[in-house]
Amino acid sequence: MFLFACCTNVLSLLTSLPPGIGRTVRIAVCVVATLVSFGSSALCAPVSNTLDPHPLKTADTSSPQATLKSFIDTCDELYRRFFGEGRKFRNEAERRALASRALRCLDLSEVPESVRISVGREVAVHLKEVIDRIDLPQEDTWLDTEQDAEKKIERWTIPNTEITIALVKEGPRSGEFLFTAETVERAAEFYDVIKDLPNKERETVTPGLYQFFLSEPGWMLPRSWIRALPPWAHARWLGQAVWQWVCMIGTLVLALGLMLGIYLLGRRRAHVLRSNVLRYLITLGFPVLAMLVPLAAIHFIGEHIRISGNVLLVTAFSLRLVFLFALIVVLLGAGNRIAALVIATPWIQPRGLDAQLVRLICRVVSIVAATIVFLEGGRQFGIPLTTLLASAGVGGLALALAAQDTLKNVLGGIMITLDKPYKVGERIVLKGYDGFVEEIGLRSTKIRLLTGHQASIPNEVMANSDIENIGRRPHIRRTATIQMPSTTPVDKVNRALKIVRKALDDHEGMDEDFPPRIFMRDINDASIGIFLIYWYHPPNYWDYLAFSERVNLQVMEQFETEQIPFAKPALTIHMAESSVQGISDLKDAD
Image (cartoon, rainbow, N blue to C red; front, side, top):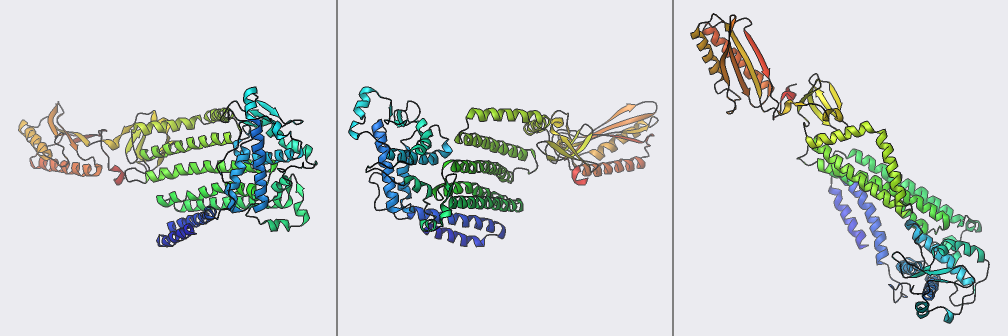
């Protein structure tokens, strides 16, 4: 309750948060508070006064005698505790310890790990019921540890049965004597054969154990309610009582509805809060909660409704499969949210190459993590790893063949990301396209042309093309030739050179490393040409045009004052633009 009160105080503090994030966090805290309250009641519940003096004691499997005795004594202790105290929450931890001790006597290596505990419990009940109904040799005639060592016995079968205890030679249980995997597999068969026989008169006999195992509900379902049900509710079909079928189906429907509701709520909140990275990251809690619902359903169905047999195996397998796919969805969603969190930092352009690289890395990492989870989940379900790898390899090959063009574009995008020949906002020219880069995606690059149209070019083409990056020019260069008639006197030619040089002397936008150059270059029968070249910094296109206009007018006015004529054509201008390093501001003007 203290932990629940802490969560409640935190919830009250969250009322001061903004409405959007406040609602999201308050929903998560409500769920956490409920789980914390539930868990704290389990942890803080009073402990039974009849605790096992050796709670960490494990089963003695040093010989066939020791294994059989440990198994019988542990099952007898569990039986006495169940019927003496009931399946109450306060002895849950001790009950699990005793059950684990009984399962330690069984070779469950061939049972899928995901259902090993539930299968082991049912096998233990079957074997105990069988042992209670068969004759056992006198205990003093059983093989003991010293005789085992002398005779080096590795296998012992209970007389007149096929129940065998054998030495494990490989694996983590190597050197222990366990009920063999074949015995584990045939336990239900043995029980079906002897279930109508009476129990033997022994102190360790546990009458009604199997019926108790099948029908006794967990602590969350009051036993008085179950026992008060009419007889038809206790009728069995496929090994389960009618009330168990009703509770299981209701649990599955509730779990499915809860998962769907949490997922849809989280998706809606994520769509609304996507613009806010922190809130978007918090919405990952919704799919995480939805992912945990199947595990809670498995626990409730197995521990409290007490479903058993093949019905439990199929149900648990299906719910664990749902959990596996939900976990994969969570991993993929986490990759997207982590990418959004990194891209939100001020040093990364949201639509630039770095952002695409971050998205790509996060997606690859999340896909790799999901693949590992898929393979490990398959192993837990008992599917060989080689089979999963072979299936993944065949599926990957088929996918690669079907998506060759897409893969080429993705690889082209990776090459562009690494080489960085352009970035968002820069003006580029390639294959007749002239415009500004708007977006660099995994499949294509979008360019806003100077005409206003948008061109989407596959990254494969972009990676293999010659690209002229106008956006990175450090300056705008102008070259021009002023033509005068060939009959112009030399003194006026000299005067014309002085006028042009004065107009460009220490001009606006001049870089010290790039002074203007003016020479009389051309002389022929028709005209005399004055060649000029200058560079304008920074490469702001509209400022450059305004400056060039002022230079032209100043030259024309001075020529008119000095009565220096222009040849026809009077003025020929050639403009060349360098593509080195810098950014053009033509985009703003366009």
